[in-house]
Image (cartoon, rainbow, N blue to C red):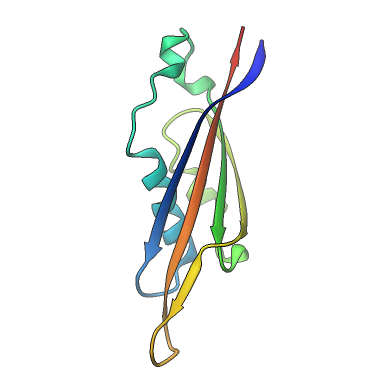
Length: 113
């Protein structure tokens, strides 16, 4: 069997108030995943839990993201989460709060003959 990249999905998520980087990251991954229905595993007669999903999240403060909460979004398979510097933070007029934008990429791999 050979590990093959099958799908790349991208998404964006926000936390409008509260600077919650995990909430924005979870929403970004959901945006990437929830707009499609992958049938590639079943088309190859593979179990959907055989999918390996490599998730990359981009936010301004990577250390503020709970990787386990992001990983819990995956409906099938196993996964890993890497959080890197990226995204966007838009500070309010008073400088007391900000809107956080997170970007997500989910790359799905399968072992195929």
